[in-house]
Length: 266
Picture 1 (tube, rainbow, N blue to C red):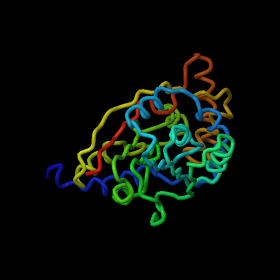
Picture 2 (picture 1 turned 45 degrees about the vertical axis):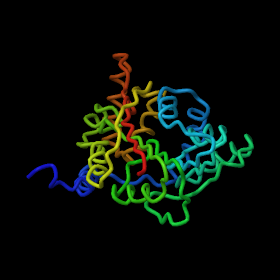
Picture 3 (picture 1 turned 60 degrees about the horizontal axis):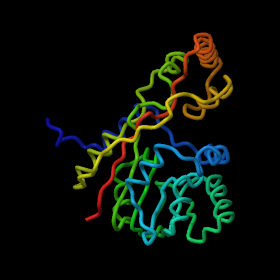
């Protein structure tokens, strides 16, 4: 058996099952929309700067921003004059973005409520597609097919390099075994198998530690990712948190490095 015998989409799906992955309902993101806007929109970061510099979107180019959130990229791209289609499945995110659109008078910013899994027949073709931190999908082939159908010039994706967003110690503390998310390597290999020789680079971020101030903040973050904890798991998480506090040790969180995958459409 060689690497050419591996179906990376099928292997990816098996990994999703093995890690008990479930799609977060849009209501969870709705509740985070206002806070995310406060933390992300209009805020300078190494991640945002490197991604925008790599994309080099021109004012006369059209853009589809998939998983746009509160408008971290859709807003600056629209402000430079590009026609931007901002797509998300969270109505809360789109509502926040709609407020920015009105406040900043961005008539060239168009909002689309849609998920990766839904029908995209009425999603317009554009010059440039961006999917920033929104590529953990159920089916790689379906995602790639949609990208190829809608992009006329270039596609830019970012994907995880680490298996977990949560501190590894959390899983030991609550007594759960978790192999973590499938990383970018599945996507990169599946693109190759489908005839797309994509470029790969990495974006180092400033994140890497939990920024919450209380145990309740940590519990909320853990349950956002894993679902509700039972009482025994909460006791374990409480002990983990107290130990970190006593030792003055940071709690790891997020992705320190993101994979940036992009290609020119032939």
